[in-house]
Length: 497
Image 1 (cartoon, one colour):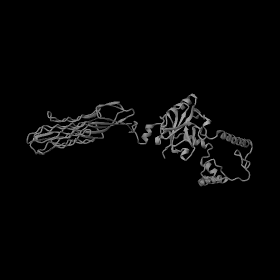
Image 2 (cartoon, rainbow, N blue to C red):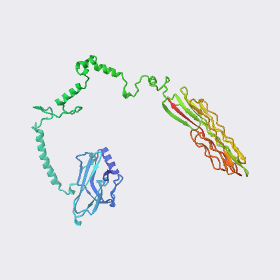
Image 3 (cartoon, rainbow, N blue to C red):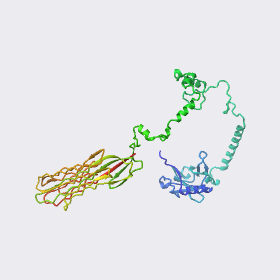
Image 4 (cartoon, rainbow, N blue to C red):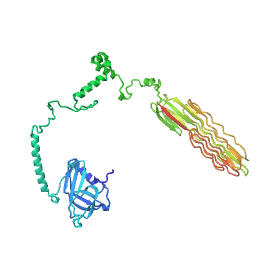
């Protein structure tokens, strides 16, 4: 259950106690105040400098260190029966300067006045945790104590004197408990008994004869028949009088489990024996992945022995759909996707390599109908992937007619795992004046091509890396509609140790 009622040091109180502890001084807490929180149970806040709604502030009746916790101070105040007529929901402690040192909330309680017909002496207690009680002055004005302090003090003195006398006599006696055996080296007589511990007990409990006999029998009984005597056991150990030393020396030549393999003399040979590496020390452990979407230079990560390169050329752009006459339509094909290649290469002798990212082929316009091929992506002299082919235009002409399909792109070079040329886009369709559509851009291995737009709308660019732009179409009596650009290529380099 969440704590609802608690006390906290205020910021002022914490600062004063910290300063007092550092300087060896003390904070003198002198008064306690109570309030009703304006009718609402407040939440103690270290930033408070006063109660929400203070109703009474009087000197403390008691201020002491908790006998069960040396870091706790207990403050008490007694409210007599002739004061009250209000609720108590908040408590504050104040020092001699009038600063609030601590604040607490408490379970709501009503303090009646005697004239209300219910008289009650109310004791309010706050328990405060501090880092050092030495920094707090335990000083109380006895004149405000409602109980007779002299009576209490006299009774304490009487009880203390009586107890001191009894304890002194008890301590002075050589053997105050003659019916008990001494704790240190007791001299037991007769046949004392003790509980028999369980067979696997390894505690400091006394082992009686029954436990010892059972342990010996279990040891002998669990031995093979050929090793259940000392002579047979010695013979099995080769009659080696220094058997423990022999075993210790043998264990010294073993690998240390806590070293986690750091004590292996030749790591590369060890990995070869496990089938995890070759003579050069290559194990195929992935060190880092570097992704390039713009041209630049790749710097080899220290420890890398091989690169696994994934290289994708840029997608082709689409041509514009030419302007049309009154009974004409025009269309354009989507752009082709860039070629893809993948391979693993030894990079032990290099530190850097140039990375070229192919730019997406440009889209055609009214002034330049034909779109552009995608650019090639490459990494040094290791691998190269050409870009996709541009989408071709068709028309203006009277439908129906079938445009020429795009060719596939050129194949990649340098690959040793997989290599594939980029796919050319499907041809556009011109069936009637109201039914003419450009073709979709070719998908790449990293995403879809441009989607087909509505008639009389410009083309859409490619979606994923290396994909082609879509084609577009025009109905009768339309101005030219622009093609769109293919998507640029991408290079991914996995560095392997």
